[in-house]
Image (cartoon, rainbow, N blue to C red; front, side, top):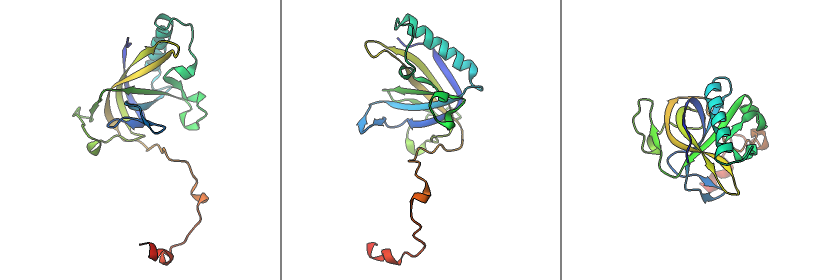
Amino acid sequence: MAGKTYKLKNVRLRYPNLFTTENYKGTDTGKYSATFILDAEEHKEVLAEMQAGIEQMITSELKVKKLDSGRICLKDGDDSGSEFLEGKFTIKASNRSPLTILSRSREVISSAAESPFYSGCYVNAIIDFWPQQGDGKRINANLLGIQFSKNGERISEGSGIDVNEFDDLGDDEDEFESFK
């Protein structure tokens, strides 16, 4: 059973798979997904509500006292080891059904070609939590809809290779003429 819905306002978007389903280790998950970054101070009210809702779901629906933090979709960025996520929380949410995807003016965006979304932009999102039963007890999040809010600094999802790992080849391209 899904829990209460939460509206996340003005949160950063990361790893958006909004128009095509997510691929994990070469396998299509069949899910549309995104990760949202919430500032611990700016979003403290909704974070407190979500944490209370998750705790209630753990005890009443999963019938356990506590879950390992790795089994809960709401993560404390301070535990991530990433300087970028210090003072922040992340939530990964997904849905097997195509999403409601909106512009700032609430116009439906139906294709990636017309999409303003990218890793680093700010969005509003509506999510809810649900308990996964059985041996693999977890708390997961459904992504119900997303709205573009504003541009933000792009979050690089690249390999992190330093440019100094490559040799400076200069500007002389004559050596490569035979490959054209």
